[in-house]
Amino acid sequence: MNPLKLAKKKVLAVGSSVLKIPTLGRCPKCGSPLYLTKSPFGNYLTCSNPLCDYYKKVEG
Image (tube, rainbow, N blue to C red; front, side):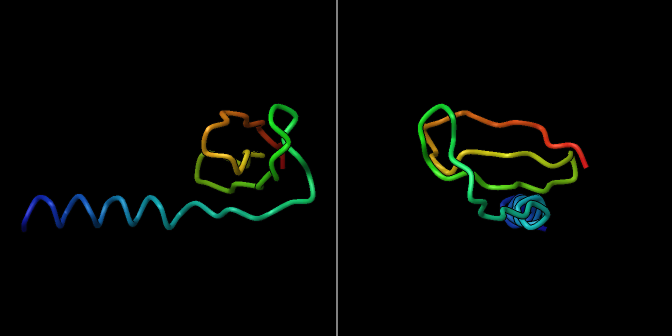
């Protein structure tokens, strides 16, 4: 199989396992809306601003 096609399949597989759900919260660093991000590594509150690096692990 073409290595590029294989790499794209892996990226799509990883990307599809992450779910982002909008919340009513605001980022304490920049004020942008927060998302609840569910991934195989746990649940996190993440900032919607791509230039901001705020995230917080959520239990449960």
